[in-house]
Length: 484
Ligand code: NAP
Image: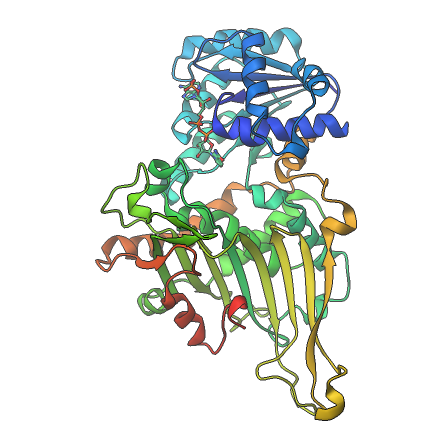
């Protein structure tokens, strides 16, 4: 199958850090269909050769294991082409149309790795130049708007040029092997389904923690914040994967229909809920890995008076027969104590205790998403030391390390997602109604913050966020996983 991948933003950070390395990995693994052509687009003037050497030098910064040898790069570089085009100039699309139509590949993928302000002009010009044929797929990167209204506006413009089944909205968390394993765990095994409900599950925690700060993206982050950057998309998609009903089959719309139902069932915010169940924080100076790091307001590109949140913790509830009354705690932030993304399913304690157990001990399923990819099932067992103590149980865990079991060279998120786009598989992409529902749910939080003069609570870099986050969860009698 021949394909053209038109990469708007071909010289940008996302292209060289994520997309081109992912395409190279697929090329190296032999999964990228032969007969492909990558047409990188930006406004600078480069010949194909100049672009290839630019990318060769960028690859020097990629992880060693993912870096091509000189010989591999030579072969991969044969796929790379460059076209100078200013997306805000309609006349520039003539050249693109000629280049794509001349070859008439089986599939054309247009990847918009540019700011969302360019989505509308690009889509309009693609349509005006006949580049929205049925075999064309368009890929949209986040952020898709900064609120419900702007998200709808983007979706409407894109849908003016492409059908919904041609639109691939990326949420790269869905491409992570660990998230696919979560679907496999829930819907490929009979074991957990009978337990996956309010009768047996006490609470669920979703944590996406980063130890990095805003790096070079301070100016972008300062207009975005953690709620828009992480909760509205990644965290809510993880919540959907954990809470959705079993879909009727593995087709994209069956899965997306079930995720949509979860988003629609999220309990609406009331003013007391917003006050008690949402914590926003902002990192102050602190220590990470023994090194002093500056506070958020001292980062380059950030307003010194900024009230942008770098941390959010919240408590959500799903109003459904399966989940009524089960709190879902979501937490994400920058400059936290570690890089760690996981979901913890906390089961209820036994209804009647015949053994002595450590205080609060109960079964727990920990799904690790990063840095490691695995599962831990925490059980209680009778260990050696109990000879003296009689019927006292100790916590033990079954530990499944997917990296070790399946090899750490597994398909990465962007590699998987790019191959899915080329193959036309929409399962791991987000439908517009899911996105809109997620925006509808987070908007009251944004509105409340806009009028709340208290601003975010400071936390020292290298900690787990403001103490109010622990207080929020403690009010329900629970704690975050690292506090156990
Ligand atoms: P970036 O480094 O600033 O790159 C932007 C790219 O777009 C450059 O190649 C730039 O090249 C090109 N471009 C800008 N204006 C253009 C125009 N009028 N016509 C044609 N090309 C134009 O940005 P980025 O970090 O790659 O991010 C791109 C988008 O992806 C943003 O919306 C970002 O929020 C999103 N995103 C980024 C990441 C990430 O890890 N970087 C992750 C998720 C989402 P010229 O200036 O030379 O034209």
